[in-house]
Image (cartoon, rainbow, N blue to C red; front, side, top):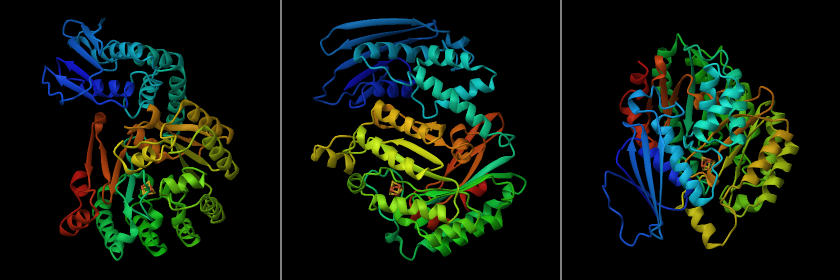
Length: 493
Ligand code: SF4
């Protein structure tokens, strides 16, 4: 266990996240102003005392190791009253994080690829500097000085920021929006799943009722957007292709009938699980104007698929991919996961080689994000399997594999509990990149999100952002929707 004592509440979460990045396996407790309640029998390996004297222009820290040995460090910062923004290199927040980083780096010997950055959208920083007019050299200098970001991640952020900037052209005038519809059903539940999704078999006879609720939301919200430009539509989940062809057809029809889709640049339906894909469904989607789909292998090793409860084979992935090509889809994404249980570097290389043969238009590389208390984690521990940790070599193999397929990185995000403290990266071929993904990452326009568990985002002038979610529980969502108006109606009014 690591204990941090601090005298101010501000940046509590930043402190916690950064310490946790150095010690992912340890519990980290942050106490403000001595509010200590250390659990009995705790094995405290490090105590950090922070004195945040930013009113006086400095921050002091003392590290007390398990052995009792102490070490102190003090750094100067801009006085809080004089710091215009937290983004300034020597703002109290950035100096605090650099001070912690320096001491923890010395203590553990670890270099974090993203330096002091702990947020989920690191590319936003490079993008912001780009929009301020900085050239690449200035951005590089800023990211290294301010966040101790590695050369590799700094360059990756800048490369992606340029690409995102180009792809977002024409969508950032304040008049555009995107539409998301959540389908919370899957063929079965994968062992590592962290989404609100349940096996469709449990909802027999209820799926049309669910879709009727989504239709109600569509009808209630469409008039609010009649003067806006719809740029992208994304039907996700879950696995939307668990819907029957007639259900897909009516959902697409409702969307096209209610919103003006004449300017839509991209219409995605996630078809993630290959065992949910049929030619009938593909042709229905193609006929309905869907332009982009996903066929997600996760790995090309059958033994791993079995272990993670995917209930489909590699052959089904390959068949589904070729079926989608035959149906006329020219923009197909494939998702893979690094750090899967039992997988080592050669398995990742094998997966990349096999996917390379299919020539997808997009590849999204995820690092496994899994809770220690999960079913899968226990299984792996009980069976003494390797894996569950993404290594930098795996990331390298995936990146090289993607680039060898002619794909370039275009979006990136990090998430909590991510294996090895790495990130998820989307790669695309030419302009075949997902606009909706970039919009969600860069938060450049409002997103109207419908269906259970979906979260709408409204962007106001001055880039103030508000969010509104629907209930995650499908039953509660349907009951609410049948009893009254969609909360999105009021949210966007
Ligand atoms: S396909 Fe995705 S959403 Fe569905 S159960 Fe598996 S991980 Fe969860």
